[in-house]
Figure 1: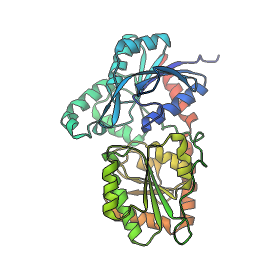
Figure 2 (figure 1 turned 90 degrees about the vertical axis):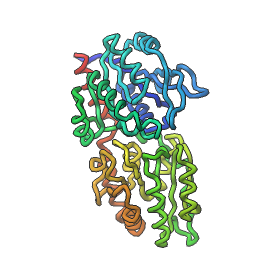
Figure 3 (figure 1 turned 60 degrees about the vertical axis):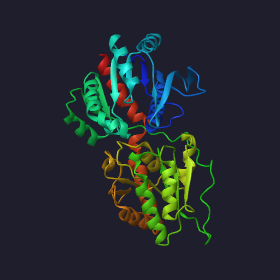
Figure 4 (figure 1 turned 135 degrees about the vertical axis):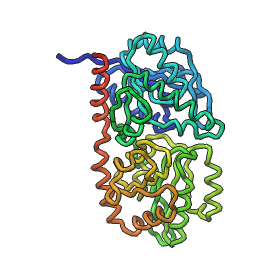
Length: 383
């Protein structure tokens, strides 16, 4: 007997256009679950000019008032509004994705209606408390986070290393590992011109970063390593894609390092346009010091690019086979990162082999795998 389709509600402060990795994650997951025959609704924040409700790829989107807070947007709504959505959509399972006030409201609204609750642990509390004014609340936020985690029916984490870490936090709710789904089908690979030719007529060695321009991304390390690479005589270009509060400081650092002619800041770019950038890049670098299982690194792997990450990323060794599909470096060693970049710049065959190995590793992140895992979780909770 075929099991019935489920009605699922995703709760996330970011959704479309997807300004964060979590927003892109919820987009991919919602599309994949809808394609599998389930009814999916999303409760998210509303930005200026966005409608309160709309259909997006057969997903019913409910948007609520939101305000900017330290580079992110916090959705503010009532429990009554969320209860109304859950009743109207006849929701079976509420799946929360963001550490925020919206999660708290959704938790209480769903609990009052007896709905099953799932939470994907995308980010640590330390990231939420990165802005200096919030650091004094880190202990309080951590205790509240553990309290709410223990009220959910299931915790999902995208990394085995993270699962082992949070098991020691006092979280008693069952924890299950489900890889972040990555879908590159909507990324146009020909929407941008390739990097400009150098004076010698050859394509410069192109280094790519995609992500938020925030303190946790550790971008000064990348700029300093790239400056060392340029000083060594490598014709190279660094492309930085993303927006954030550190944009001007990073521009100033590039000028101080004397590399403004080799560094291009693109600002925020729609997810569908990133394919051309991945295609044009020779290597993708993610220097973050606070990260779980970054979608951009997986996307770069799926485009056949070597990936360099720091060992501070929770899933670093699950993502990158050091020396085979990329490199894992120290988060404070600019010379070491420059050495790895130079090795790749001088060896096209190594870049090709690492890219091929990355494609193989990235197959585990196809959306259908996450859908199967989550369907099993949802149905087990409902039984």
